[in-house]
Amino acid sequence: MVTINSAEKALKTVYLDVLSNQLNTNVNPFLAKIKSSTKDVWGKEVKKLAPIGINGGISAGTEDGDLPEAAGNNYLNFVSTLKNLYGTIQISDKAIRASENNAGAFVNLLNDEMEGLVRAATFNFGRMLYGDGSGKLGKIASFEEATGAITLDSNCRNVIEGMVIDIYSENTLKKTARISAIDRETNKIYFDSKLAQADVCVTEESATTYFDVYAGGSKDNELSGLEAIFSGNTIYGVDRNQSNFCLKPYVKQSETITDEVLQEAIDAVELKTGSTINFIVTTPGVRRKYLAYLNANKRSVNTTTLEGGFSAVTFNGIPMLVDRFCPEGTIYLLNTKQFTIHQLCDWRWLEGDSGKVIKQNPGKATYSATLVKYAELICDMPGGQAKIYGITE
Image (cartoon, rainbow, N blue to C red; front, side):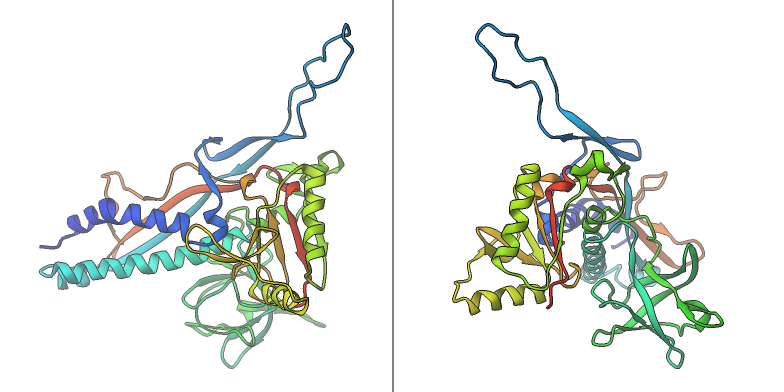
């Protein structure tokens, strides 16, 4: 007979390893290239000494001259808070009882919930890798009072049907809503319940100011993704002032994408920091532009297949992949060896005092279980990365 106890055992012994493997390797090709480590985790923070430059105790002297004095490595002290990543499934008591005499039906029930959890976690975790840690999805550009729909000021790559979003006016939460439909041609988003004008904007005498949209419950709590490296005055608690020039990555605006533009970025990074670019990621539109450039110049297109089954075009042997979460008109050139997911532990089920992972929701005939991971993405050498933006797709 299928019971809550048998479901509990299945989640712990059967599903956890499968879920963990899928979320660590199949989210996107960028994550698949990043190593994970429990090193440098101190309590709720990641504290990491990042080496800057080289050891200074090297010289060429005379035969009877003084030996060089010791001059060890220089370091910057990176400090960042571990981010709390959650994913919750829910099963009704009715569904469990309906399948208690049919193990196959119960397995299908759990499989459906696990697949839904993987899809949701894959989408949001992949999105975070390209964000700045704020969880911001865009700004409302307009509001349609008849339908209660909003239009974003950018494309809708970071939102999906079923996603819960928060609407903020500066630091004030105005409304939480769940997306029911998205018109991606017009960037218009519809919701389960009709939004009111007060939820999305404030009307002043001379202008209407629309609010910002964030991932539900995630404002300023997400991983420090790629945009955290390429934006802002600080990174991991260190100021990007003149004495820390090494923290400033290569950034260039270019309307076109050519071999020369790519090689210039790679050369600049290598000359500045000695970092070797081994991974290029961009949007489908930018990749099409690059393929068109190769075709126009009668150049052959070289491809490769990476671990995880990801297929990629190559530039001078460096794989160039696409990711839906890469910002429009942007291409990142990265040294993935400089990135680490620092984690307190790998994905685990959240357990109560009794060690149970499945808990009844208070006042409801439903049960839930929550997958959790405490982690942060750290780049040891922010100056060893490059970004080209403004490319016409």
